[in-house]
Image (cartoon, rainbow, N blue to C red; front, side):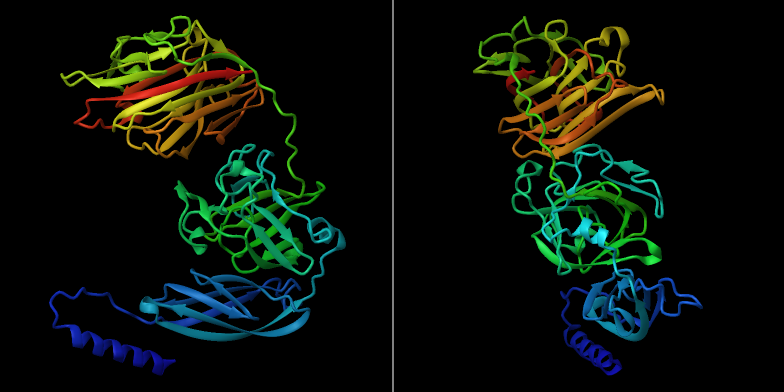
Length: 541
């Protein structure tokens, strides 16, 4: 190895000398091989009475070298990447067995250094039959995330004992991100099969096979997907097969997956999932620590497919098809007028002038305009006092403005707004779009939380292509149990409703374009005018 490294440096030096006289050559940084590589190991459960561990076969390794940027382990015909040098390895050959373990430390330019060690490990665990029956059955049992259950996915402190203590996803909250259509099969032969696209689920959004995971860790699988905060949604990834082993370090039943095997949300790390609870038939509550050692992630999986329940038979109860040219139908719409910021530092003045709001050519057109004197006019129409509804399915087909600084919105306010004010009345934003991002739609609910005596809100975003050139369907399904906002019939935001929230009484509609303000942002200095078109609004109950 030393000779290899010396020769590599010698060749590199000759190469640099040959080309150093070329003035336009780009400079490169130092290429340094890792040095002083050391490796330590800790056999799980090892003490004076158990020299070879507790029988689980789990060994924790730590490798460190100067100038190393990543590490890889080789043991028992297994190859594992360990970017930090830390690795939890599993040795399952029954009895006391001796294993050779090699770790390679990689430096810049691909230069590497290796070291080997030998360990003796005891493996005695044999999983109970009832666990095998639960997890495997006859080898055809299929598992999925229990997306319809509260707290089916979430996180908490490392070593915590309360499932999803810090955050738990609401029912179907993460629809469309590449997780709910995953299926998992634990074979009788020890194989773990991950089907990354079940086309009968997740509203068909992952037809090519995609997965969901934590940003900075899911890069182990490849690149792509949509970065949304700390998550990467819908990273393209095909079905795959790894191996699994049932172990019980410290007496805790655990599913250990080989390679990159993971369940529902990629978190890196050891790919081991503690079985926290299996008291409910055909259901497992799992816990796993992420690759950064920051959180414990919680997953509830089930081998029972979701009951689609009773299909709701909606009937159209009201609509405006905007098929009569002229001013909006006075039986349906009135106006908010004037300036004043509207609570969000907006800079437009709302009018009812035809140049700002008109029905024409089969659609409602709301137009924001520069007035030539540094100001802006627009329109905000509302159904307040004319058309209001409690619960139902609302669909709005719209094409949005494209100019920087425009803030279009299709939304609803509680009809008791004049008496209780905002946010006590409640607000449901079916569609909002910021002035700086025309490829994203926001769905949000606002209310006043009596428990904390503070304003509260919950929302999600979703990508939308061609929002300014094509009509898209913005919709909400609203009941006493939940509020679900969708784009083109694909849900992306779900909020559990309750008697404690204000979303159980009449609401009216508002449609407008604001200019600037908190979500409009900086207005394009060259702005002259831009339009939102609404093809129709329909209410079903």
